[in-house]
Length: 260
Ligand SMILES: O=C(O)CC1=CCC(=O)O1
Image (cartoon, rainbow, N blue to C red; front, side):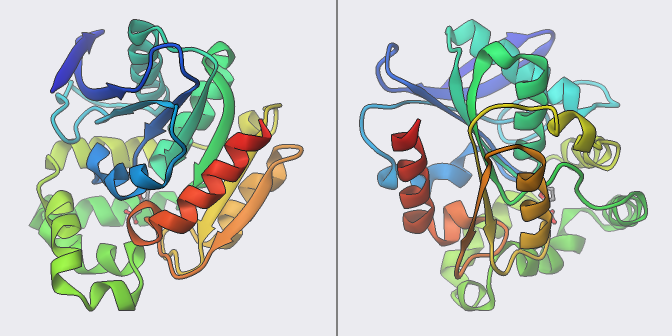
């Protein structure tokens, strides 16, 4: 179990594979920690260096004082990559992890060779929706959004299997409430559309066909901002295809990496 403190934030991470191998860096979604990528790992090509981490306020990372911005989250990732000696990497970002990846590509282009933007947008949701969700959580904790969130994260078929769903439900409700809320505020206040339209790098944008959080059209619109970006729809997945369709996601990532 590894951790590093950068700018007062202690980040829990896992860095595996040969130090000189091409690096794939993962940034995960709101209310999840880096175990969300576990089901995907067996479906990735061999010979990669893989960096996963728990963003601030999530998993085993610490909770610095708020407020936070997406730029703060991206600076955490930049600091972690610098400390691990990783540059020119492919960044795979899921949902808010996709916002962090876009921000990192704009602020530290030396760190980012290509982007895989999974179930995300250049702007996610709107002010009223995030304020309402935060009010509900302040009143009732994360358990109060559990059912609605699971319905956006996973298809009905996946949710019907209690034992398959349970670990991901537990991951959400055990997220530190303030870590969730401060990251939700950062998402609410982020509009990366203009900045992302200036990116010039290879990009694969992926959307789950039943994603209730960042629907396929939002991901298509994101792909349209970046010249040459390709959009692919993942069948039988909601917001978290790395859990629900890891094999299909792994195939798409493997194909994209082979083209670079
Ligand atoms: O919580 C959700 O609905 C999904 C989500 C939005 C941003 C993120 O990272 O996850």
